[in-house]
Length: 544
Image 1 (cartoon, helix red, strand yellow):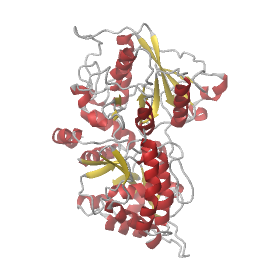
Image 2 (cartoon, rainbow, N blue to C red; image 1 turned 90 degrees about the horizontal axis):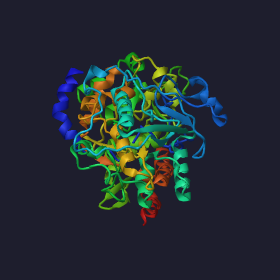
Image 3 (spheres, rainbow, N blue to C red; image 1 turned 90 degrees about the vertical axis):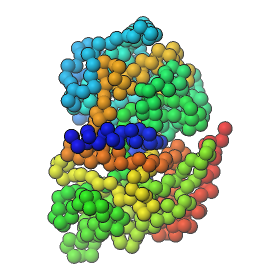
Image 4 (cartoon, one colour; image 1 turned 180 degrees about the horizontal axis):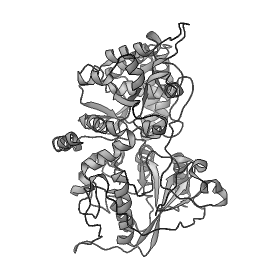
């Protein structure tokens, strides 16, 4: 890790000035957003770690072992209950007040651990109040803070949460709502309109919160309760969740998610058998669309000579995944922002080349199957697999470390090499309803353990620890430096807004990506024909 440390001093100033987020994949689309060319496939979620559950009759199976319930359990000190809705009863879990002594990741970023109050700091006493969070059962990253011996971000968040409970005299309670993030959206919307909100904060995706909820005034801006101009907030300003209508409003603090939208996962053993080293292309600066296609052709094989492809050079889970991956490699987006207006942008010249390239992969060179190829990749019947950077995080148990690694998609001809499209609208964070009771102390209590890089606190993470912890979740240890260096290399960021208008991406997948890949329609014709309908979707969503 030494080489990476020396680079941080030179790079971090540039990186933090760039606009990294509009919101992802990763790390994580909502169920049903992806559709393959022959069907649909939703992205798998990681089972929530560090969660204890109560044995209520309506969810009795949740109290069984992790294999039966789908939720890993261990000796956590966070109170977590399972609920089927806002009116379900809660049951307290026995909690431990013992402080975790372990000091992860070389021990940097820790003060004494004592909670102190400066003479000028306002003191808040919530008198033992429970601050209730509604969280989903499926997530890439655990939503309730929990102790960790291996991840500094997770452990620091947990320690700061326990410190916040002491500092603000409160108790954080996390309730698991079965049905995932989509169920939380439905609960929040229906209960908000009915005036029956029972949670203080909801785990909501940016795509919902920063468009519809911001527009309707349903979520609480943090501006009045924390100093958003302070150095500690400004340090990661471009990572936080600001409104798309009320752009000055900060609604959620960045959760230290470092993601790359789409990358190529591949089997090193399969490549080695053919004498191919993808990393060598990187080292010699020859990794481009042509060499990518060449490798895919070499790895597409009819092993028994019967005229049927047995091993595919490339595969993916859906047409949306590969379509967006190819577009982003050439800095093409589906929806962009021009001033205060959101517009359909597939008619930009940068979109023509990657869509035609995609069509050639399917139809001309026949190096990718039209079906969902996830199973083929898992069975070593495909050598490369395009997915979000979250993919290995949920599949590490299936593969030995020596076999699976990654390489970035090669840059398209219109990409200068230091640029990327980032689409993080599917990231989910804690948002407060606008009707929150006692907003000032509650917001301060939450943000106390959300801002992990504040060196004045008893525990904190350095810049390096933030990036390393995020990378460690997504890749194997040997690939951490390369993953972070790739992320840091993107000093020119272009934003993708299509996920804030959910029907738009469905329309584009059906009427553009699918028809281009199968050569039903010429690329330019498909792009032009789709424009009026998508722009209507955008205009309807943004109308005040």
